[in-house]
Length: 453
Ligand code: PLP
Image (cartoon, rainbow, N blue to C red; front, side):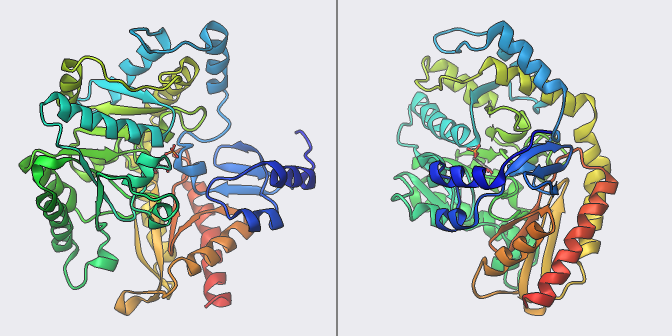
């Protein structure tokens, strides 16, 4: 294995590299963590530490690290056709084959996809697409998109606007006009004395109230992650999505699922909306489509919207790398492997249920851990001040960060989203690896409760 000079890398990195979502001052003082290689669910850093990646990178390496077949496919495709675009009525075999394959794994009625390079681009594409759809329908005034507070839809101006992260809105005058938000369906915080099912209906009513406030003739779409990922793995009560769907149908508002995290097996079905029991008109994807081996995203367009767009002729939108041949070939190999090696099925029937059982057993008895939740291989708990009163800590995020640092010190990557501690490991994780990961995590939470509280 190649040797690395950690100090030199850190200094050069600090001198020349502006990092996403990083406090640059403290990063430059401490120096970045340098990851050098990876295999399965493990990462290694430049100092030789072997780290369990409980986050699959950024919720994306569904197939696990170190596959030998994907680079082979990339090499072959690069030699054959490294690049050509899909603008102006042009195509190539890699993208045709990927589209056909995606049609096989998608639920019925999603016969078309539009390619992007990232989740944010998928979201922006969807935002333009729904407005274009209503234009073609002769309803150009139907423009407003409804997102949710604490939702995450990416970092572009469109995606960051639609997302409900106020700390993103504060930087750069967001959201843009035509984007509004409703409260998230997090029972533990917002549910008061309602049962989760009652609260699910209440949270769906917030969507209805917003539609009525703006006027249904002005609302283009409601957009939500089936499970809010970066917001802290917020799993809505079972009543929520079916009721949101009913409301969207009632007012002729398009329903969009942002599946950038939930898609490609994370929840045990191919797509999160299948697990959560609703049917969107459009869903956005990226991450798991290529398991992060190359950047690619896809917007799955339901037949109703696709027919509208087709009828409209030109959709003046696209990216130089929409349907990039090498990314398309790698995505194909990844999706085939997720399907043919039974990886998605195993999440549903085996590793997902096992993780959920062990997750609850592992964290159920800590004094300051509550709202233990998860489905498939996405799970979380929340650090709380007082379980008996469902009381959160006063300075939201402070405890989460402290706890996360203990995980990092113990070579386990979990993420703190505020005081939610979340995990979404590669979907290839075995039961033994789940045990190992949770043993480390339990010791870390023990340390947190002893040393920090
Ligand atoms: N949408 C959701 C639900 C996401 O979780 C993310 C990223 O985490 C995005 C969109 C943005 O994706 P990207 O970072 O690839 O632009």
